[in-house]
Length: 308
Ligand SMILES: Nc1nc2c(ncn2[C@@H]2O[C@H](COP(=O)(O)OP(=O)(O)OP(=O)(O)O)[C@@H](O)[C@H]2O)c(=O)[nH]1
Ligand SMILES: [Mg+2]
Image (tube, rainbow, N blue to C red):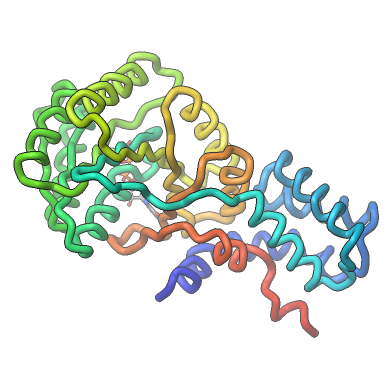
């Protein structure tokens, strides 16, 4: 299954909800005017795209209408897709050009950090890369066990210490092991943390400094994992983490289990941090590179419903 089919399936609940929000405007639309713009903005807000992004997108549609005829639902859909796509225009590649490169995975409890790491590891191993997992979530003994299960499944190496040990020390040892074994990428799992718990945020700073010292110049991705089912709360988490960590991207998980998939737009357009990967299930293959065009194609009401 390609990205489009999978994302379409994963987004089923979201698209049903979004289609419902758009059904009025799409069934009655004939021209851009105050009423239709208001309807459009409301549909966007109700689709979890966020008030700010909804207002900005509506304004852009209005501007475009000044020099381009938008007089069918299909034309409106097309313009809206272009507008949202422009607003989400970020580099969504993972940049891992050094050997080893480092992916640091952070986020609050239970969002899908460890699962996503397992999926990423599996993908790189399938590409022939040597992957080193670093069990820097030392908060619970079960955390390292869970990561070890994923390491086995994916065919990756793992470095772990005992419960309660220093996460930075685990990272230090993983880097040494990765150098010794010639790993291509080190993926660091961390304990779930709230951005307002200062000691846990300091711990991330310490991990950062170890990487800087032991692997100066290494390609780094700091990925924040967000749970799409939490809707607008995910946007707040992204804002808070972005203030304290140098985020390079977002992994948005559990898109398959939510009607709130519109928050992808709120995050990518509103925050300036690209969504790079999306989780669409619990299986090892249920992680996809984010493709904004295909995502929007799946998100917006289907074209088939408009041509009649
Ligand atoms: N449906 C669905 N479930 C997911 C997805 N990603 C993760 N999960 C599930 O979410 C739950 C939590 O996942 P974990 O990977 O343990 O989350 P975590 O962030 O590592 O949690 P902590 O280490 O406790 O902070 C598990 O039951 C996963 O199977 C996804 O994309 N879709
Ligand atoms: Mg975990």
